[in-house]
Image 1: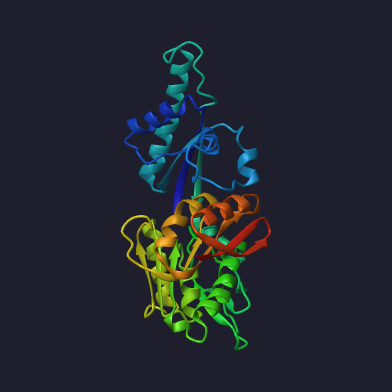
Image 2: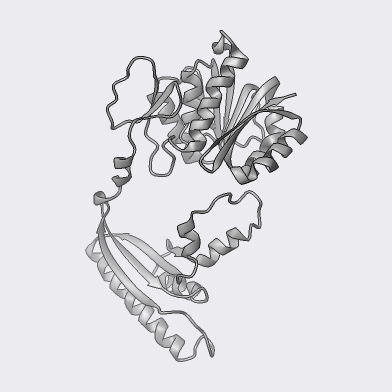
Amino acid sequence: MKYIEVRIETSHEGTEAVAAAFLSLGITDVAVDDPADVVGIMDKKEGYEWDYIEDDVITGLDRPPVVSVYMEDTAENRELAEKIEEKIEELSKAVCGGIYGEGADFGELSTEIKYEDDSIWKDRWKEYFKPSAISDTIVVKPTWEEYENPGDKLVIEIDPGMAFGTGTHATTSMCVSALEKYMKKAGGDSPEKMKVLDVGCGSGILSIAAAKLGAGDVLGIDIDETAVEVAEENIALNGVSNVTRAVYGDLTKGVDYVADIVVANLMADLVMMLSKDAAKHMTEDGYFISSGILVEKEETVKDKLISEGFRIVEIMEKDEWCCIAAQRR
């Protein structure tokens, strides 16, 4: 689809006035990219809000805020883009005239109008997603790629969409390796008797992996409705709907399911927050596999799990991440 992008460079003080200028033209769906918001997250008002921030995000904190709008490329919207530019020029003159008070700084108030075609780039990320062995047993392949199975691999076919991971991240591969190991320990020669709960299932890859490894019943839950829809599609695509399902839900509220293994690839603070509830949804001597944990937070998470009655049985590390396997005592 061809679209128009209109970007206004401003200041933190000016974002509200720029958004109001858009509103005066009947435009309500604006995007505000303000580095001050990242600073607010880094101040960590809620302990679970973030665990890891890319370096390029941190190094960009000194850039000016930008207010943007995206519109379909039509003759009418091209005229609207020009009206936006005129509105911002009026706003700039008003600031210079002192209407917003002496010393008001709304930044450059520069307008950039781009005419783009998203068909050129929207699927570019797919070029980097190739069939990949994420454990000794399991290979993940995208739906658009061919893969010749040597005969001894379990293949997960997945279309993660742009908003979800491909399953090749270190935290996911460690979770899958742990599932392989502890499903054998817990289920022995009867994996079909195993029940697995995947907390924060995302694209459903861990739920599907558990089913492929022989679990008899698998439940994926997520607080993101879109994630649940994507997971359900991938579950059907892999032919495991007979034993696997994904539902919208919160582990701490109204989930009535007891599993032999609970797996959670989230963040350190979320793992700690959910550890007490995870124990309530596990059989006696069940296993809790958790990842999405930075190595530097390993000891903190381990101590929390122990305080909730878990016995740490193994800790795996890969890159800067770790995966903790714990058993309910």
